[in-house]
Image (cartoon, rainbow, N blue to C red):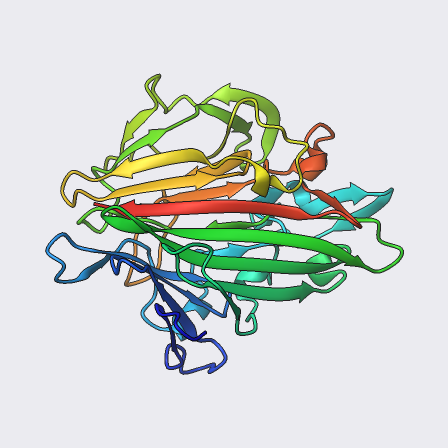
Length: 358
């Protein structure tokens, strides 16, 4: 790592588990930092230097110490989500003629990988890779082998996650790259995968997202039932106006839906070769901060935080989420199934970018 700067490790972040360290990356221009823990590869800080250069402004909802992430009321703050993000209807699916059942944790459905998803796994310390460019930090490469039938999912899965940051005018950007391959056993031909990050953003100067201006790039959304699983219909979201511009109020609009990019090739299992598309761009008139989310994925979940309730710290609508992913419950829709079904000698992959700047 000689000659490389901008990477430090805080070994005191979690007093309850010394293996859960805080890994901090900074951009070469010095305007942007991002930090992650071993536990759940959780994004803790996403911070940009203020125009006066007197301090950093963190826009990512987080706890001050690593042990707090074990709280039962932690709503997946900043977490890496898998093996399957979002919901699986009734916690049931079929692959290769076999029926599987996983934990039902939300309205009778499986949510975010089950009772012990990747958000609770303590990953080993990362391999440090060279910067992708002169304007980037080093890459942190984390790996994990998810065992066969872990949380009920078939197949032993090798998961590779890379994080790095990059310069941007007035700030910087965080990249999150995911890769997965099926290792075995011999009698398992396929598994299912859908990975995402569950960061909550607040770019304003209030305890809620009120007055944040959000511009979407699509209004094609998955219609869902009252328990948030898709009906199979793709509709225009009724709370998104025709110009795709939303201003968050105290309570409205209340959105927790998946939006998809029209024309995306949903047969692509490794999307990393595709262009990054803008999910949404956010701006707050008081702070003058901009946040832009981009992804190679065909879909993303916009969640405005209605159910966020972290006793004594965060309340409803403290932050909003842009969770890049595949379609919800894709395994149970024949026409969508291929986007989450991973076979041997195949690679699942995706890339997501969050830019933060003044």
